[in-house]
Image (cartoon, rainbow over all chains, first blue to last red; front, side, top):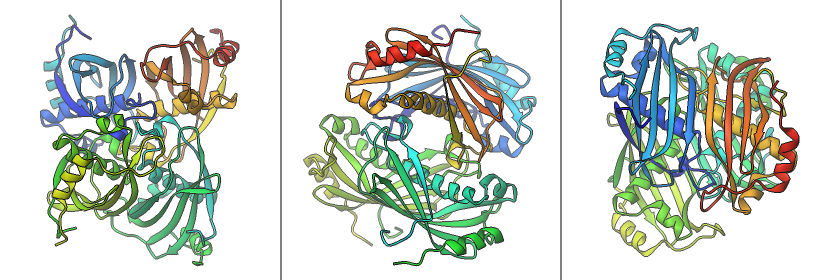
Length: 141
Length: 141
Length: 141
Length: 141
């Protein structure tokens, strides 16, 4: 992950709702934070999920690989990054991380499919998305 | 609440996901537990929410009043009760509680509206629901 | 609610995680948003919840009264307001709302108790909080 | 995953809280369901998480790999399975799945570390856990 340029970064504040009785952020919640960052990356170039949904298209997660290194705690403000790694006809791969003060707490690799809302079958990425994403793909390095 | 007969009771186990860094169940989660109990009360007589949704009908919460007395903790198994208090043409009132070993932790009163999925406008309760609910209304006392 | 001055307002973006199969924000999640706003109001004057927790003090919700008028949807950016209504020795009352384009979607009144982390028994509000909150109390209008 | 015996299986009902505006279960929630199943596997042999927490020990997820094949929907009752794959001194590997009517919707592999609550540093699994888990390890098949 360290070798990639970051396409987008979202600050996320940790509230009580995000933590558990272990005193730290509940592990599943990082997947929410990472989805927020992907969604806001798209929003930052004018692409909304509701507009997509109205075209009967949704993005669904096909594969999630997450490594947890250090915990975030109540009141922390973490940065959640997004790097576009691969763009297919109907799928996308993102590398993401959650960082605190420049230190990686958690890193993830997500494969997202573009599917029809009713059938849940793959559909081609809308052209505008495809164009934007192709321009963002970060060569490994 | 103490004066009412209970129409339905659902055991709910407390997991890490339900707790927060305060070491107890996060307050908003009791509203989830109470919705689980209402939903399972309907399911127990054969009424599913997905079937309702396919008729373009959803139940939405219009008013929630919740009193928190004692906290539930990790591993507790609480009982979440439902009493049907009032049945209108397109709305319902439920009194509910979350109990541990017979002691009330949290009690709530919920007004639910029956609405059209697209317009979010009130629609009459389906006849089968109306009939079932009328038979369950618990007179105060 | 309309007659009160607002002490703090927090913009909250609606993501997939906040919605349910009804296509709108799940009702319990507004309680999360309202807690985020209360927490950020305190943070805005330098009071963190983690610091409080380290003094063995937590704020717990004792009473929540929430009215739902209109739904928020995916991608909406709502404003969540806080008005300090009453400040006791060990308790607080807040009036809050969630608004979209100036229209109230949801309003709530929350009674919060200041308690000891281990015993869950009431403890006096820390002086700095008390002082700040007394200065914010909004006389009913 | 198909080649392994299952050590434990937990039925999980899908409620509105679990779904999102895409009409299906929100992807991060499967991680919650899988944790519920791991927790209940331990509970089924008398090991509670609260008791562990009182010994200042918590289990934390170090690595999660999740594949999503088919979506679960409102009202579905899925079975969430657990297979113990590897038992180390202070870590565990589980393979898990979420199934509907015998069909795998989602499968996951989780590495869990046993850590000290305060320091978040690894500590040896309690003897009783170690003994139980060693007896459950499923040789790859």
